[in-house]
Length: 264
Length: 309
Image 1 (cartoon, rainbow over the protein chains, first blue to last red):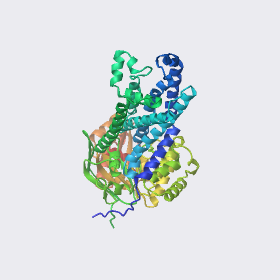
Image 2 (cartoon, chains in turn red, orange; image 1 turned 120 degrees about the vertical axis):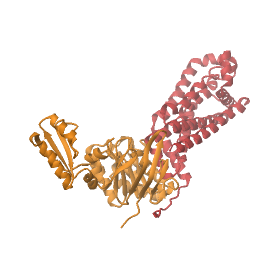
Image 3 (cartoon, chains in turn purple, blue; image 1 turned 135 degrees about the vertical axis):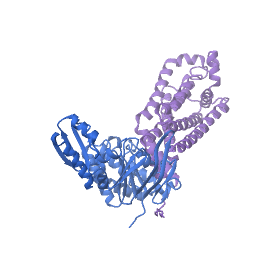
Image 4 (cartoon, one colour; image 1 turned 45 degrees about the vertical axis):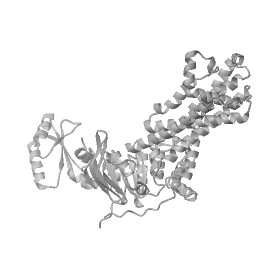
């Protein structure tokens, strides 16, 4: 009979590994211009182009609201969609290179190495949103309430969590770059079927119908209301939509991991 | 004296949808050996190594590493294993220091142990001058050394290397082989898959030849070479027709040469009766012989005879 060799069991508590994984992924985001600079550039580009071209017209039909304040939540949302997708990109890189397998063999579990990219993507999203808000302030944005702006950023981070988790799940499930990019692409596309340049009530009938059933409309509206200090009439649907997206992301990751285990 | 094997695979089968990658494979790897798994593409080498490394689950059969079942005790088995996968499985945006330190964190080592282990491995593999360079900027040979260093962070008893020198230039390969031999001399068992017969000849103390998911031959390089003949006789004949006639009528196993239509080859064994039969056939074409060469068998001959589809 073969007796097992004696092996010392090292400490494998998850906290240091999760923290190290977050540090590593954050470093990767900061060292990859495409993952940080591109979303920032995209947000600033949209901000400058839309504000420069439409703010005069917009101010005429948005009495009491600055056009930049109206526009900013949507600019942030499109930036979140692009930036949070970095989580899937980072996970996919580790899957296709075989590095994730190597880390799983070392640690015994995959989870910390998925948490790292998700948190790193959210850090990138925060940096990108702060830069965008600063940029908006430079060209004339004056919020009614800074705590409201802070709450708006928190809402967007929560949305980013859902996007990051879903793109991570797709990376695990598909191991394909084009599939992993679908979530950010879908959120980015859907964001334009909201009240982008005008309130939903002012849209053409068919567009108003789409915007009414589009959950992103309520997230954008909630963000606008947080920034302007108005009553949070859109918040029940907006916050619920964000929560559902995050829960769906967690469930999708769990299912993708279970599927990966079954395929081993 | 018999030693408990560090790896023991029994009746190992792995089926992917409709494809049978491993088919009742059995294998024993002795501690301290340099065990090379040879086989053509699709023979099952990578699947075998992934199952041993606890990364895949067999459809049936079992593998024990150091006595631990890779399915029921993957963590215990995994602690004995250092893995260097086929591609450079590294973080391209990190530096060698960061990669080694992160591996040590994943293994659960404390801060002091991590610092010491990282420093020792950088020194051991001569990676000190690259410690702050990003992995993506390193040469293929340096990346492969780092790959091996990462596999050694856990101070494993078994290091698994999947096609370790693919893509390296000749000098980098020779350098890497020297690192592997040095590592093995300290008692670490190496389990290496390769298609490179020269690499197998240089490195292996033991070889298993895989074909269609089974081990079709196993032994030391010398014993495997003896299996296909102790020597190879090459005859150049005056015409292609003479060579074709000899191959088709041969009872001792003359083979045609793929590159020269007028050339035939025969593995010659130590068996006197077989030698007598071979000489009789050679005598039959004596007038046609224009060249003769007697050579030691190589692993190429072993591979052609045992692993060919």
